[in-house]
Image (cartoon, rainbow, N blue to C red; front, side, top):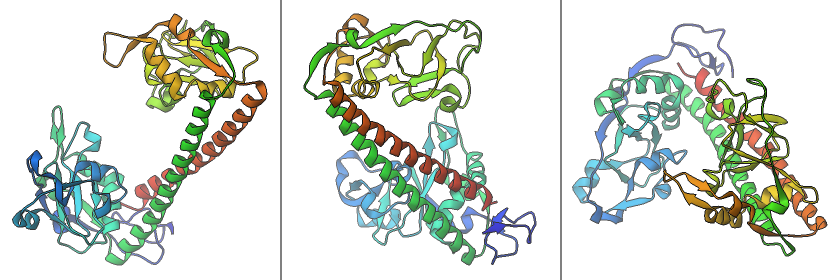
Length: 400
């Protein structure tokens, strides 16, 4: 693999295997694929029969195989003939709520045949291409832009057979397609393996979190454990703006890719390392976090900030506050608000929630185990992110 300095031209990718040269050729997708909308059976026909590919199968799998297709449908012989999906066919998402996701695609890589649903467009393989190359060709930034511009709609964005057939992309010779497809497939396999490692570590951490909530010990209320703080920023942009979410605490720039807070953030609440921050409206969904990521930041005055009192292990308490028992108690302490997803926290009821806390030694043992998993998880997430960046760079530079 090398930068393509030797063979330059308008139709040559920036990054290329050194054994290949010459310009790529432009083709419309109709040169390789024949498009057709899917089958629309009534509800009574689902649950038995031939496997039935839906939009979720396109979006939720690295590639589509027979075994990963979840639905099945009773189809006639004529319907199977008309809507059959075979090895190397490409499946496209017809409709999306966002323009960016319109026409997302995947390939079918199984010798056992399926049929496909009405919200899907099948690209029947009629030209010579390597299926994995086609998958990544369609995932590349240039291809995504070419497909998106063919989409249209108001509340939902749609793309049709005609729009897809007119998408024009550049293709190399078959041998180069195979090399590119093999390389990106290896990286995808590594990403999938890394994802499974992260899932297993996350499950292990969750199990330890639940163990924290089932310990024998002395009964303490949250009023015994937490102390509210109300430090405020004194000037605009004194510290970076943070957001507490169900998934964790983030800077607004990394979570939203921009600052969305009011420009006048003077008087925002200050969050320091070791503080607990929660959203009173969304606590019932688990929006409570221990800040071990940022030395200091500011959050909207709508949040509540607490410090953990001396005598309690912060890592243990942080795990306890994210346990299933805690989430159940938060729901009981929250009252229905004006919105279905927002509930108003009864602070008195929240502070009255009780947990059994083990002695300092047991807290320390569990905390060390959680910290070790968190460290391992952080490393594995970093590897996962680097693999994703590597794949993104290759999709950007190996295609035109």
